[in-house]
Amino acid sequence: MKILKTTLVLVMVAFLSAFTLKVDKESYKIGDKIEDFTLKNIDNKMVSLSDYKNAKGFVIIFTCNTCPYSVANEDRIIALDKKYKEKGFPVIAINPNDPVAVPDDSFAKMKDRANEKGFTFPYLLDVGQKVYPKFGATKTPHVYIVTKNDMKVKYIGAIDNSSRNPDKVTEKYVENALDALLKGAEIQKKETRAIGCTIKVQ
Image (cartoon, rainbow, N blue to C red; front, side, top):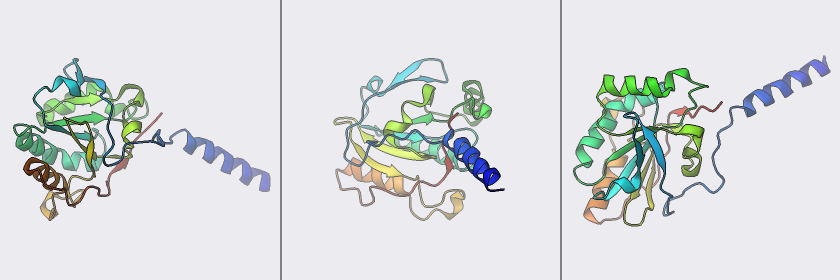
């Protein structure tokens, strides 16, 4: 019996370890300078932050097709892009999930979802899952605001204080942070807790 229990425990550990997030120990923190990246957009073109010559910064959001938290935030993400892109802070959405582990997060399915919802922003696939670990993203959605002039992280966390129901939002973390940056003021809440689904790995 003890041998059986030990075997089961080892099997469970091995199974869970296969799905461990690949978050770097030295992942980005507030004030850190990020590296640019190049990922494929749903229009099959490669996108880098350096492509945005006139941007003041970026709202980088790790999101996906399948997480109910991400789906519940899609309209809010679209609204953020429409409101702040013209002010210099476009949304850059990145799907960090492994499409082998989650077939509905495949590149083809990303295209379908973006067309269905009318995404107004790039929706990039983190092929090989090389970008999200550098950021330290663990959830979908997980937001990072970065300024363009110094490429530094200014905010990390959730979009607002209601992960699922937009009618219950009483504090808009990302909007407040962006408004502060646009005014040249200090962001009052630089970090909040991201609530969502765990990023899926193969």
